Length: 386
Figure 1 (tube, helix red, strand yellow):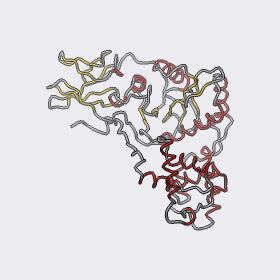
Figure 2 (cartoon, rainbow, N blue to C red):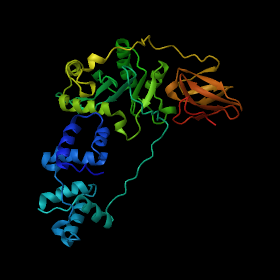
Figure 3 (cartoon, rainbow, N blue to C red):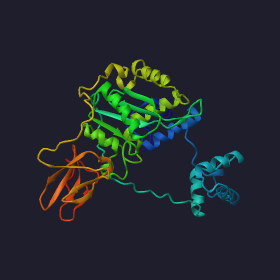
């Protein structure tokens, strides 16, 4: 989409300055009447070249020629053979170091495609099983917490550090920033237990589809950790695979951590950074208030992990360590993530039972074949198996 006709250069300057600190990039692009693709292009040019990068680049071929010279084409092909795994952008950068006149990136793409040197990118279809995505945004504190691991780095002593980050979506309040020993379920669950004791329970937790928050093979993507959340009455929210914008505020938090804490490994440094972020650092999205001015603990108190779940009006079945339940002396596999929890069997006629785990509909058990069919990516209110 084009820029508005009035003083496009000044608009670009104004746009990129706002783009640096915005929490809603797409909305900013809409305000300026441009597509997100155009917005990303000008922001990247500003990062790389400053305000000079906001000038329009000529789209004419080199030397106003309609076709690239044979020597230029041969040099492109030679570079591709020298670096077969590199794409047009990297190859153009190498070409730029050697020659004064440089073809555009699109020219590199066109030449390499005609030479049959472009490997088609295959999009892998990921399992939909773990998708529990609503797209809703929190409007009050503790409605949704978001969680993720900040990308790892090596500390001063050479040890790997990968901080766990948890925040309240509505108020931006950083609930936890902790250098955990590992990403095992037991380790992360212990962190959440301390957090729940201090701040109460949220309505929902949003995570990506990685371990230990989810399991790409488990029914509804349930892992032992997320099954525990569900047993506590917490709803699950997951970002879509390959869509970091679904948890954009959390990704923005990680950028700040990357710039200001990379290389740190002492928990005391993380605690001080979290205190400053929550109590001293104003946020434009919060009308220049600090997160601590708006956040308050949840009224839902954490009373410990229940021994089991009850299902009034349903047949309860305990899930064994193998992930199976016993139905009429036949083992039926459900999920190892639910081991030691009970599921509820609700008769739905035709010798079939809906299988529930807390507030989730897992799927359907067929009595005639003693088999379980998953409800792919559905919750009780969304889908009933046919």
